Image (cartoon, rainbow, N blue to C red; front, top):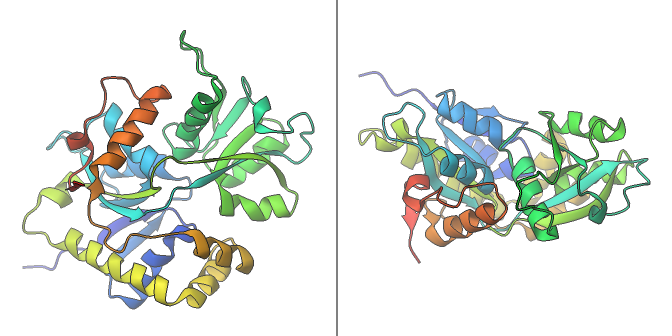
Length: 301
């Protein structure tokens, strides 16, 4: 019998990918790593089209997609959450153009144009969570912002400077060097009210009892996390040289991030809390989303 082909793993090529890189480099993970710089919305599309087998993406993006369009077994588009990658929340920086003197703070953004990578991405969903926190969601359903889908971080930065968009939201440390250089201006921030990164897998990988590749991947990723924690300086060098971060920012990020020691499974309470907030923000319907439709491996507390 032919050996199974390596898993195709989609990931966002940012600093959070360091343990995944170490799992392949140092811990015998045999997989094809495919970068998705446009983020979680693109990962969801590629899972559903079977272009990838596993994805590591943002909690809110996966849960919103699964709640709005449940993954029915055998549909060919089915996927579910199988693990938790990062335990700490994510800090989203809110940025505008460097010369937007009319936008001095995030309090001035109601009714403005928000740039997002894709509809359904974290940069899209967190805009509505932010609007809910500010009290800008209206009962008549009128949207708090005009939404512009711009695909990439580079295009988002250009858009706020040429005024195609008024603002966008992106991870703090990924944005920071562009704040420091003066290319874009930081006007606020928002933290996710949930742990920030999850692992999703196609139904065909989850349901195949004779296929051990998913369990092997999760075990190797645990080893990658352990290697990351034990080799902080090597992680700094990798993040600084292979990714778009300064050495100081890499060090500062490592101080605050906490990866899961065992990535397998997702807490029921995390999914319930995320669904509650996404419903309140109007992203997910009041009757949409059940934990069992979202998660394959539920960690009860």
